[in-house]
Length: 104
Image (cartoon, rainbow, N blue to C red; front, side, top):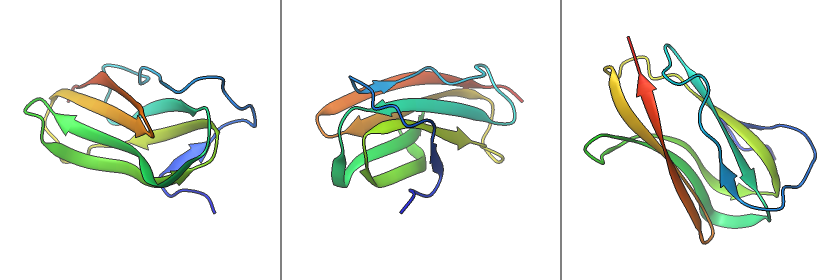
């Protein structure tokens, strides 16, 4: 079953977990976020969430099980104001956060 909201890109299994910088950045109206999962993550141990500058969660792009692979998620914040946001990937023991800039 494919996770809703994200797409697997390619069949290569990455060697390490990674959250890549979104593109484009700054962005309007949407941006793509690529990330690598080095080994399968079960249950709800994998999630990709967006937070505002105050640390409040404003979007959950994915939460659930992921098989090893390379993935891409798209975020289209239609009703969010311009500003700085943060994307946080958690997968098992791996956590990384990147900064996203929305300009309208």
